[in-house]
Length: 224
Image (tube, rainbow, N blue to C red; front, side, top):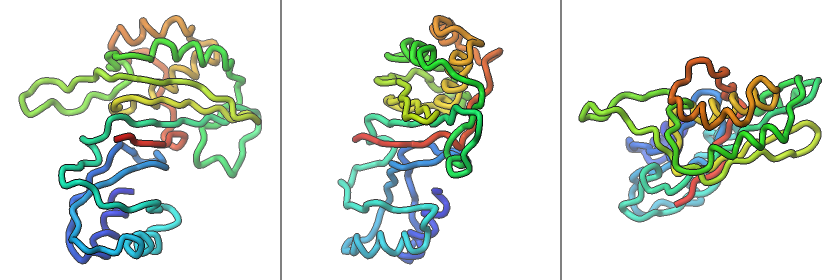
């Protein structure tokens, strides 16, 4: 998404830009509420600018709104929280119209176990067990994988569609998909919800279920 949008912005403005994105969207991950920031010349017609970007990038990439921000605004560092959604289609027969945005699982999941597994996630914790370690800081120190999760819940949308909603101060690489993969194992009865605290305390991914596929994940909202 970033490369496509950046190329379109540079073409419309006829100048190079440095695009800053609010949240990570790996290959295959979707975004409904992604926020980007960049320096632009004064006097840009915002409505015409938005329409030009949509004509060039749509329908795969759509600009929903454009606004002038404060000089010190940064889409990533100014954010106070981010919300992701992961959608599972849990029924025997897949749906071709949902295939691109849901993880299809034909084995029945126990919704009560999925929800119980969320309890240990709430609060300020070390999520090393669910994160891919990034490069160290310039000082050589490892990056902190402490995150504050303020909400984590499963919602039954009906007809076998289950959605996992999670909100946190920020997320580390693969964190949501790793959590979903572990919760699904609990919903299948492979793991017990009570094991979640021990999994987090171990600070080790070894032996955990595989991460959920990327196409079920969506960056839903960014707060400032």
